[in-house]
Every structure is written in C-alpha cells, then in structure tokens.
Amino acid sequence: MGFNSSNIQNELLSKIATNNGHGENSAYFDGWKAYEIDPFHPTQNPDGVIQMGLAENQLCFGLIQEWVVKNQKASICTAGGAEEFKEIAIYQDYHGLPEFRRAVARFMEKVRGDRVTFEAERMVMSGGATGAHELLAFCLADPGEAFLVPTPYYPGFDRDLRWRTGVQLFPVICESSNDFKVTRKALEDAYEKAQESNITIKGLLLNNPSNPLGTILDRATLKDTIRFINEKNIHLVCDEIYAATVFNKPNFISISEVIMDEDVECDRDLVHIVYSLSKDLGFPGFRVGIIYSYNDVVIKCARKMSSFGLVSTQTQFLISNMLSDETFIEKFVGESRARLAKRHGAFTKGLEQVGINTLKSNAGLFSWMDLRRLLKENTFESEIELWKIVINEVKLNVSPGCSFHCTEPGWFRVCFANMDDETMRVALRRIKNFVLQHKGNNEGEIKKLQCRSKLEISLSFKRLDDFMNSPNSPISSPLVKDRKGKNKSYYHFV
Image 1 (cartoon, rainbow, N blue to C red):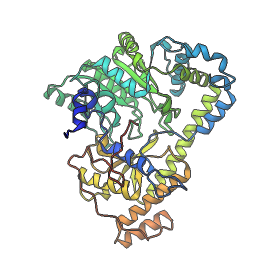
Image 2: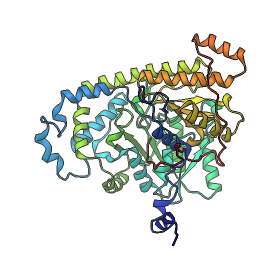
Image 3: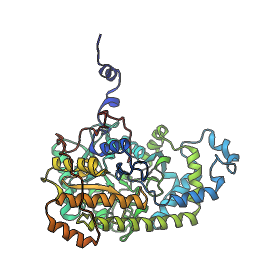
Image 4: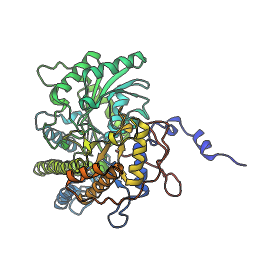
C-alpha cells in the first residue's frame, strides 16, 4: 500500500513546526546551501563557492586566542580554571551571573564611548540576538499585530520576530535616492498604510548600524524616530549588535544617548535595546544575546520567558573574565576597527576598479553592492537571474537585495570580514573577470576598465551556461541543488 510519508508526518505535527515562517526557502538561505555543497578551499577545492553571505567578524581571532592562552583560569575546562568547575556547573539564577551582567554592561558603555551608563539589573539574557528579538516580540505584541521595519532589512528578522510569535513586520520603504535614509515621511506613510489595512502597529524596529547597509543613524534621525514613537505611543526596539564595528567617522550614536538629550521628550518605557557579542567580538557560536529595557514590566516578563534560551554559565564565566580585562578589550576593539577599516577599504577599492559602486558606509561586516547596471531588466526576476549566475558560475555566495525586502532590484549584500586576505583577493578576481565578461563584446569598455584599474586581467574566460529560469516571486527562489539534484536540509545563520 503506497502512501506519502511526508504528508502523514506533517499531519501529526503542529502548524508552527511545519509552516514556512522560518524563511528557509528564500534566496538568502539558498546561497548558504550552494556553499555547503561546494565550499571553497585554497588547495582542496580552489574552484568552490566562496562564502560572502556570512556576516561574521574573523579578523581578530588571533588576539582572542592569545588572551585565552594567557588566562587559563577564565575557563573551567582548563587545569587553571578547574577549581571553579562545580560552582559554574550547578544550577544558577536565570538572572545570570552577577559578574557577567556587570561585565556586559561595562562593555556596552565602553563601545559607546562611555557617554552612557547601563544598569546590570536591566540586563536580560537570551540565546543570541535571535532569541532576544523573539523574546521582545512575545512581550510587546500579540499575534497579528506588527512592527514597522525600514527596508532593506536583515532577512532573519522574518524568522526571529514572526515565525513562532505570529507577529507581523510592516515595511517602511526607504530608497536609494537618499541613500536609504529613514525619514519621518516614510515612517508616517507606512503607519498610515498599516492603519488602512487594519493592522495594529505596536512598535518600530531599527537596526543601527544597519544590516545590510553598513550605515549608521545620525542624531537627528534618532530624535525624529523618538518623537514618532512617542506620538503614536508605540515601542522602539533598537538592534545595536554592530555597535563596535563602526570603523570610520561619524561615530556611532546609541539610542541610549539620544533619550538623555534635554530637547528630547521621551517615554523611556517604550525604549528597548537588543545587543549581542556575535558581531562586535565575533562570537556567534557562544549565543550571547542581551535585552536592555527601560521598562520594568518588560524586564520582569522577559526574564521569566528567558528560561527557554539562557546563556550557559560556562560561557558567562569566560565572557565575564574577558570583558573585565579592560586593557585587553580596549586593545581588541581598537584593533578590530582598524582591521575592518583596512579590509573595507581594500574590498571596495577592488570593486571600484571594475566600475562596481557600493553604498557609502562606515560600519558592519559587509558592503551594499550596486549591480543594477548588470541587470538585463529592472526587475526582481532579472536580479535573481544575475544572482544565480554569481552563485553557480562565478562561485560567490552573495545575497540578493530582494531577500532583504529591498524595493529596488539590483542591490546585493556582500560580506568581507569572514575570510583571510588571500580569499578576498580570489573573490575580487572572480568579480572582475565576471564584470569584464559581462561587457563581452564591448572591447572599448574593457580597455577603459583595464586602464582605470591598472591591472592586467586576462580576457580568456569560459562561456557562461544559459540562464536558469526565473522564479515566480522576487523574494524566494528554487532551492539550489547539488549535482545529484538532491536538496540539503538547512539551519539558521545570520
């Protein structure tokens, strides 16, 4: 007797577990699947896919490793720290180790130039920023209600805030004509459209510095958003997980600074900050997420709910020791910013040499790359066509703008801090070769680009295969398959 075991299994599971709320089938995650199938390695697989879809800071791990070697007592899994094993291994208060909360609060102050103070008692732990966002969504909104989010925004927000909570995200349309700035008009327009659709807006989510733009919000914009949320009586959630990645002027301005300005009237009960150590320290595997709220009731509720996603005490112990070493932290943050600035400069200059522009940025682990002139047509279908070529032929995992809910085709996020210098150079050579090939028959344009870049670039390229069929939706694409045509299972990344 034949039957479809997959359908039967789904009938036995919950709708939340089996729905598509995770967003796994978007182009953003498809790029990851392509990389998993054929990962680049300089010697073992030099023609493989280079991972440029991972916003990870790997430029200063040498400094971290040196510190760990010199500070054996910071880990209970070394001979030097074993004497603390029992105290750390037994049950702890889910508020978190006091020294951990104090150390994180002090680190957040230092990253913000010591212009603000944070109270350790207002820290709520979570399993990474993913857990922090979901926790806040559960606390601040009911299913069907929504948060405004400026576009383009990080694809993981759809998973983090929507999937299990039933909360919606309502886009605030930002455009390239003003460098995707968040304006009061854009906020008002989105709020009005939500009301026309009978959607209750409970808050505004800001990502500062921005993923994927790599830009920061200035003081005037932050003040305007505070006035907006106060007038509407809605919450303001500020994701500041890239705060220490600002590598050039102007300096980062936290929402915690702006609400203290004398000319700003603000109901602080409406303001909440999401933070983590995944980007600023490069520790995504430690799953350290923080909610800092100025609302006592939110803190109380979030702390109870945090029981489902706490940070292990072993991790808390190590992190508290490391962050308490202020001499090391000051050196690390300064060196990290310097290396990010150098890498960003080298990467964007390499793109400029073949006529590829990026949005001017001074933060983050990525660039917002403008490939609009390479599109066959100004459509998201053409964007996905181009993305498939970049993935399958150029062998670079970059993320198309449609997966970030960008409303203009042709923008791509490309990460540059998760690889060594030589891998970056390989990636740039592939990009340059592809751009020149795209110019194909226009020899004059090729010579012009060669002159500008002052590089000797071979014009002997292999011919691209025919374009793959375009997807029906600009926000999703068919799963990238391996050579046997089998899909790989997948998990979440940022």
